[in-house]
Length: 356
Image 1 (tube, rainbow, N blue to C red):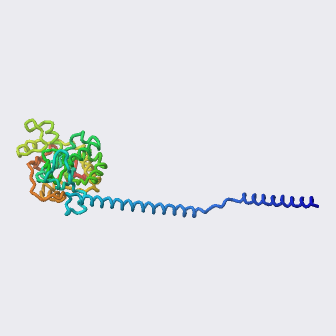
Image 2: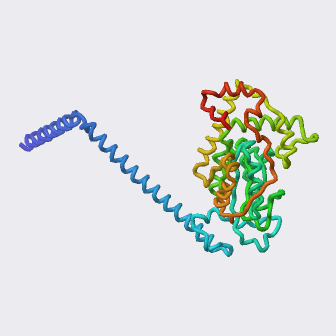
Image 3: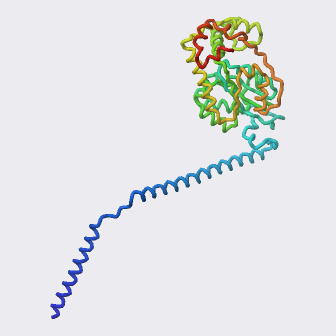
C-alpha cells in the first residue's frame, strides 16, 4: 500500500509540473503589449518641452552672468583712481586710460581717451574730414595706417597694430600724445576691414571702439575723382610729384584740367560694386557704436562735424583744414565723354548721380 501511495504522489507531482509547463507556454506565446502612436508622440513632446525649459534656464543664467560681468567691470572702473564719477555707466566701456610704453602721460594721465576709426572708401573726403578733426586740440587721427599691406596681412597683424595705436604708442604728425582725449585712424573698407570684419567687429565691441562712417552719396563723382587721382599718380602733374590732396587753388586748377574718359560698358558694374561695398559695411557694423556721415552733407553744412564731436564726447571747437577742393565745376565739365555717360545712366537707378 505504501508503494501504491508513492505512485499516486508521483503522478500528482508530474501532473502539476505538466500543468505549470503549459501555463508558461501559454504566457510565453502571448503577443507583446504595444503602446499606441499617440502615446509615443506625447512622450516625445514632453521630452522636448523639458529640453526647451532647461535651455531657457541656461540662457537666463548666462544672461545674468553677462550682466554680473558688466556690473563687475563698471565697479572695477569706478574703483580706479582715474575714473571720473560723472561718466554715465553706459559710457564707461568707451572711456580708457592708456599707459603708453614709450612715454609718460604726466599731468594728463587721468584724461579719459575714446577710441575711434573713420571707416570710408577712397576719394570720399576722408582725408579732408580727418584734417578737420585733427585741428581739434584733443583729437588725434593717425591717417591711413592700413594702406601698408603687412599691417593688414592677417587679423593678428591688424589687432597688434590697433593695440599699439590705442595705447597711444603710435607716432604720426597728428599725434597729440599726452593730452589726447580721442585717438583713431582712417581705415578704407578694402584695406582688410571687410575681409576680417567679424574679428574686427568683435575687437571694436570688446575694446570700446566707435566707428565713424564717412561715405559719398554721388558715386559717379567719386569715380571721377578716382580716375583723376590715378592719372596724376602716373603723370605726376605737380612738378613731378603726385599729390592726393592739394593746399592751394593753383594746384587744384592744374589737377582739375584732366578730364577722364569713362568706359560706359563697365560704369554701372563699378557703381554697383561701390554701392554694395558701402551697404555691406553698414549692415555688418550695425551692432557697433557708430555714426554715419556723408561727404556731401559736410560740404554743404560744416556744422555736421559738430555731430561727430558730440559722438566722441569732445568739446566743440571751430575746425579748419588746408585742403582745397579739386573738382569744383559741374560734373559734366569734368568728364570728357559726358554724352556717353549720360546715356549709360539715364533710366537706371543711378540716374540721379547725373544731377550734381
